[in-house]
Amino acid sequence: MAKMINRLILKYRIFRIEKLQAKQEFLENYRDIQVFRQDKLLLSATNRIEETHQEKLRGFALRAGITTKYIEQEIKTRFEKAETKHYWEKRALNQIMIRKAKTHKLDEAQLEVIRNKKLKLLDDMLALRKQKITASFEAKAKNPEQAVALYENNSLLLDALFEKKTQVVKEKYAAKTAKIETNKKNQLERIAQNIKNHKDMIGKLTKDMPKNDNGLPEDVILRLDKLTMRFGGLVAVDNLTFDVKQGEIFGLIGPNGAGKTTVFNCITKFYNPPSGLMYFRKNLVEVILLNEYPVHKIVKQGIVRTFQNVELIWELSVLDNLLVAAHSLFQTGFFGQLIHSRKLHQEEAVLRKKATDILAMLGLLPYQFVIPFGLPYGILKKIELARTLMVKPKMIILDEPAAGLNESETVELARIIRKIRKEYNTTIFLVEHDMGLVMDVCDTICAISFGKQIAIGSPKEIQNNKIVRDAYLGEE
Image (cartoon, rainbow, N blue to C red; front, side, top):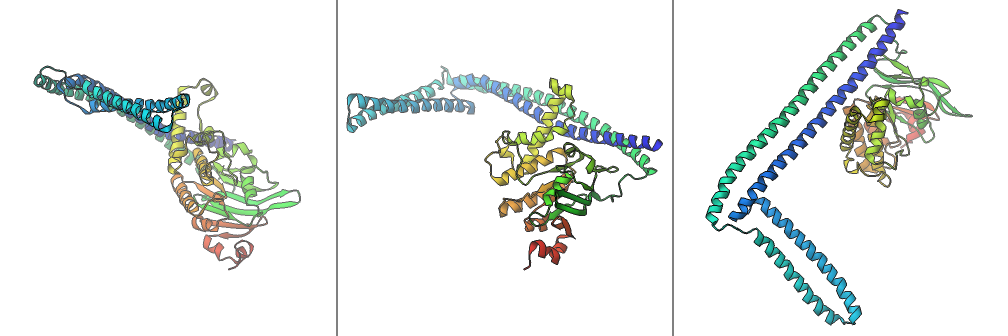
């Protein structure tokens, strides 16, 4: 009974650590969003002060005949409006001349003479408009010297006032940013202390408790033990056994029809294998049996995958495709979702930021608001890979990620796979027919044929294995 209670306490503390770590990540990301908003508000406030300052100076500058950069911009804007009006008047004139030619039966020479006269008149009108615009900004003071002195005096006073107001606004927003930083630091310190307390208690509980790891070594994240999958009389996977270590890139190779995708479908429970066991290390002290989990709960254990054929939601934008994948990360409950609580909006902002960061890392940011339908195949493959990163995966399963890619795209994919393994501290398990990619990125390779394992080892060992060359690579 005591052991059962200890195991329940252990599971609860592991659950609390995962929740606290999720909150920790949320606070770090939301702090960045808050600081960004404060910077945006500060820029908006200083721009408003600048506009007010320049508007006050404008009258003195006009009376003194001084052209500031804001007056120059105003003149330029009015010129552009006059030119736009001139352009449409010319377009209208062309249509009028076409109708007149038909009505009065004018020949080309007569039409050209009338058109040129009208065009000259329009050009003269444009020049006159510009002249009036310029004249409206000329000095209006009877005593220019006095107006210049008045402008200079007021300019000094208004500049000093502008600097003072700007400084007050900057201090105000700096104080708000400092408060955000302080609150975040205090919260993160409390969370870190709570995590430490839970880990210390876990250490005490597991010290005298027999391990519940099903004999799985500490450095192994996935073990297939005599996995078998049959379709009627066809044996697609036959007594397959191997280990995938934590943090490695593991490759599964074999000829077409060897059963590679079937292995993936068994791990992610799209298929229920009739025999064989599949162990997965969920956390430091818990190893689960994947055979006992339904397909919709596999993602929550930390296993995500891509597919041979790209599986995206074609009606949604690229960004929304990533956000759909993050549905399991929401901490807001049903009632909070129903009323669109403040916490829900904060979580959505954090997940949106996470999605844009992932898209930026993979070079997909220009496509974030684009519907994926019709995009190049290499881009679609990247989008599907980006989607797997939304849920903090412990293991990513890639089913032929280089299929349909050209040579340069394959080289880029190899770089991305290594980068994901390093930055996300995750294990990558891939099936691929491109032997250049497999030998380049994989730490361990397992070769199968007709569902049976024929070799396992490093890329060099697989390359030098005669059985593999005969079954798959072919003799030179």
